[in-house]
Structures are given as C-alpha cells and as structure tokens.
Image 1 (cartoon, rainbow, N blue to C red):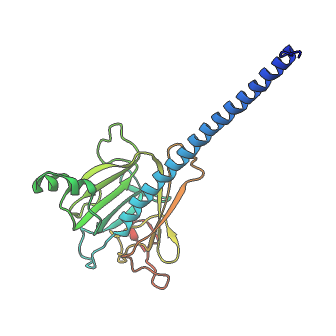
Image 2 (cartoon, rainbow, N blue to C red):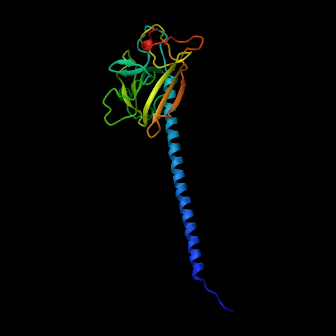
Image 3 (tube, helix red, strand yellow):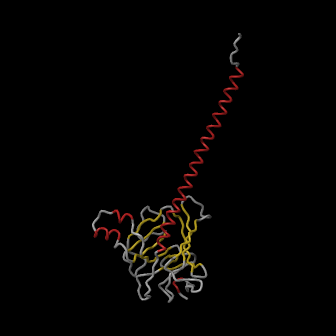
Length: 243
C-alpha cells in the first residue's frame, strides 16, 4: 500500500488555519479583558455614587431646627459664598444642624477613653453642626473633593469650628437646590426673615472625577423634619431669607 505524506500546500493551509484561529482567540481574549475592565470601572463608579448618595441622604434626613425661633444654635443656610457674600446661582455651600444622626463606626470601634473620644469626635448624640463645601475652611493641604465639617455640640456660629475631613475626594462639582413647597430655590437661610423652616427636599447635583460635567448625577432627598407642603409653602424668595 502506498503511503502519502503531507504536501507543502496542505502544511501551509494548516498553518494558516492555526494562525487565524490563534488570532481570533487572542482578539476574543483581549476583548473579554477590555469588557471586564469597562464593567469593573462602571461598577466602581456606581458603588462610589451609592456611597455618596447614602451619606448625603443620611445627613439631610436628620436636618433639624429647634421649634423655638429664639434659639440660634440650630439653622439651615445655603448659598455660594465668596468674600463673605452670597452670589447668584445654585448653592455650592450648605451649613445645617442635625439631630439623631447615626453614630460613626470609627467612634463605636474606638478603644480610647471617654474624654479622648469626646475630644476627637465631639459628644455623641445631641445636636451637631454639619457643613458641606468643595472649599475647605482650614488648610486642606493636597486634599480635594467634597469637604465635611462636623461640630458637636452645635453653636450659634455656623461657618467655623469642629473637625473637617473629606467626605469624598472624587467629587469635582456640586450644587444644591431646595424645595419650598412650590418651586426649587437656589439658596436657603434661617438666619434672616421670620419664616425659619426646613426645605421639604434638597436636590443635589454633582459630578465625579473622570465623568462628563454635562451629565451630572442628581439626587433628591426628602427632609422628614420639614413641615413645608404645597398648601403651606415656605417663604424663601431671596438669599438670606428676606421676603
């Protein structure tokens, strides 16, 4: 019986087929890695937004004003501050008081004594003063993002005091608007004017590093302690609460 070997043409065809298969497998592998990278990056962005949304929601859910208008240690103030004056446009800075906010995990896990914990975190519970801004009150060093300043207990000076840290370093822009029962207001203040009330809701628009500023994330948070409704709107028609 005559045996037939592999011809040169058959060998070339086999090599070409193996080459094409290898190229297809390589492309599929690279595409899979690229897809997984994009999915992972998208998942990280979603998780980052969820963390920010949860933190901001928790803060505004606990916004509080004393029922006694004569007390000055509770307030809700928001505007765009520059050289001490409020500019037009949506608020970029907000200072408000909260009550009943959940205790920080770091405080619960701390092994320090009572006095040290009070010195670092302030007295747990009670009324706390919260400030949110992209501009730090103190020297931020190389830190950037959305800064949060917390003071316990709150006092009648809403612009300073307490401990400042970065709530999230990836936030590159943020604006606040406030529902007065009939419309969204760009500013809010309980310092001036007789109508010292919390907004019914806060609309927060922010962008994260690496994302397009043309498609910011929007979060609307209801303020449970507010008594503002469509039938009983708040009078916030000008910066500073003037009517």
